Length: 135
Ligand SMILES: Cc1cc2nc3c(=O)[nH]c(=O)nc-3n(C[C@H](O)[C@H](O)[C@H](O)COP(=O)(O)O)c2cc1C
Image (cartoon, rainbow, N blue to C red; front, side, top):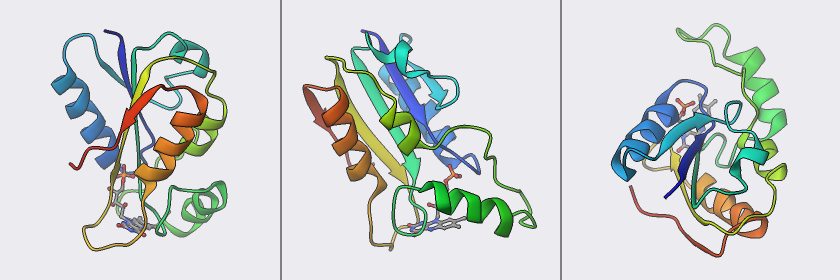
């Protein structure tokens, strides 16, 4: 089974979870940032797992990423904004026939869901069967 775990991550948490999920799926699975996983390479994937952080109660928008690029530069660790947003990545995803799952990282009490938004977009783009497991 060709499984790809794709992530958007600005401070490394979502990347770490993506790597753990790929490791759990098995040796055929790879964790890749949105920059490392061009849509064309996804067309024949059997399973796409996509994840992103919840920022401002939602899957990060382009506007939000511009804002954190300015407002968080003085944070102890500035955000990594070098890869495309999950939204942009999903919009460029070609049609496929694999399965899909999504995940998000977040603080525990917050309302909103990035994972549900990702899954909806994955279903429209590509997948016949999908799920958002509770992590
Ligand atoms: C600017 C900013 C906004 C955030 N907004 C939310 C939020 O609305 N809800 C939430 O649960 N977590 C929020 N978080 C926490 C992040 O979702 C969490 O730290 C996430 O793991 C970051 O992922 P990353 O390290 O992969 O970038 C926010 C964090 C930042 C820096």
